Image (cartoon, rainbow, N blue to C red):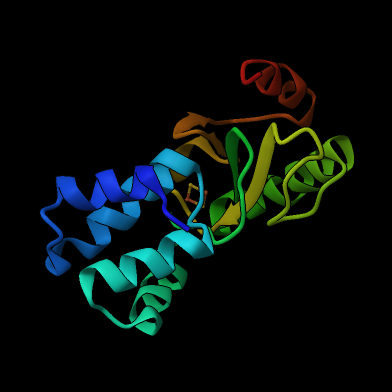
Length: 150
Ligand code: FES
């Protein structure tokens, strides 16, 4: 299968295998995940083993092998956030969005994941949506935050 966007991405990196991670980042950004066909195409075009590509794709949390929703919601469950109620936020989100950690809502609006400390423990408990930090959260504030991300 010819994948035009991926071909353009490969071309923009001069088909250079040392740019493999950058290529994967661009595909992830373009398609919101790394489709298998695209990875096979990258392996052939850059002449790198598919196993190496999968090793990278599964090592970095920024990459996803499954389609993600339009918004990526990370619930911090590091120690500070856990102590301040992060697990409660996660339970509330699981209940309201009807998904578990690692899943995507039926309408493809949110994918929810958990992280271990996002580096702003003073704001615990924290959730990060599309890279935006929301801290010192009470469960009652979460629905208003979700409304910001259509
Ligand atoms: S534990 Fe959540 S920001 Fe550090």
